[in-house]
Image 1 (cartoon, rainbow, N blue to C red):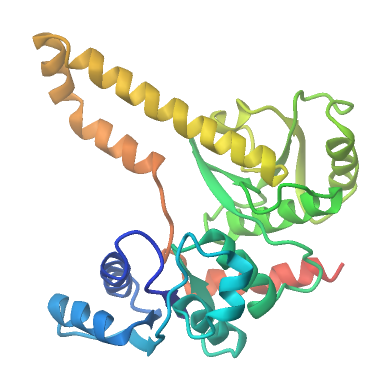
Image 2 (cartoon, rainbow, N blue to C red; image 1 turned 90 degrees about the vertical axis):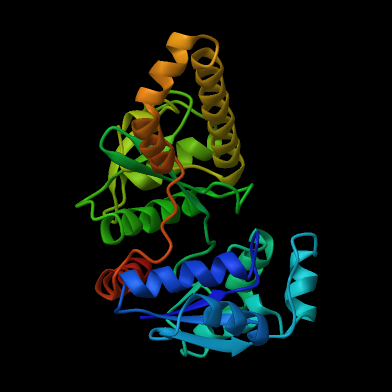
Length: 302
C-alpha cells in the first residue's frame, strides 16, 4: 500500500510528520509512505534520523495550506501545496490513500473536489473514537456536516461499520443512532427519518437509538449523528475528561499520602491517557484496507 502524506500539514510539521512516517514504515514493512512537501526540509530530517530510506519516497511541493487559509480558496489557488499534490497522487492512482494533520476544511474540500466520492456516498464524515471497557466506539460525524439529511446518517452508518470491521477487526459491528432517548419514536424529524431508513437497511447491523452515555459504556460499536451534534459531544467529552484528570492531579498533589498514591498509579494512568488519546494512522494492513474499499463500493451500489 502506498500512502501519500501531507508532510507540511499539522503542528510541528514537517519534523513530527516525517518522524512519524519513519516509525510507520519501520513497524509496517508492507507500506510505502510518500512524503509530499518541501523536499529540502523533508530530506534533511530523514538524513538526520536514518540512513535507511526503505519504504519512504519524497515528492516536492512548494506551497503550504495554512490553518487560517479559507479552505475552498486555498485548494483552488495553491495548486502546488503539499495537501493538493498529495491528493492528486491518490486521484491519479499513484497512491492508495491520503493522510494529513493539516487544515480539516481543506482536507474535506480536497476530498470532495480532487479525490472525489465513492459512488453512492453523498458526503464524507469525520470520525472519532470513544474508549470503552471493550475497546472503542466509533463516532461519526464529528464535524464535517453540520446539516444532514437522513440518508447521510445511513451512509455514516455504512462507512462506520466498514471501518470498525476492517480496521478495528470487529465482526458484524452494531450501529446505534445517537438520540435523546432509546425509544423508537424519540428525537426530531431528522432522527425519526434516519431511524426508519436504518431499521429497514440490510447494509448495517442496526441496534436502534442510543443515548450519549451508551458510547463510553460500549453499548454499540458505531454511533452515528449529524456533524453539529457529534462535534458538541466530542468537545464536551474532551472538556470533561481534561477537567477530571486535573481534579485528580490536584487532589493527589494536595498531601504527602496523595503524592505517594500518585506515584504508585503513574504507570497505569499513563496507559489510560494513551488509550484515551488514540490515533490510528498507519496501523491497518493492505489486506484490510483493500477489502474495506471493495465492500464500501459494493454497499454504495445498492
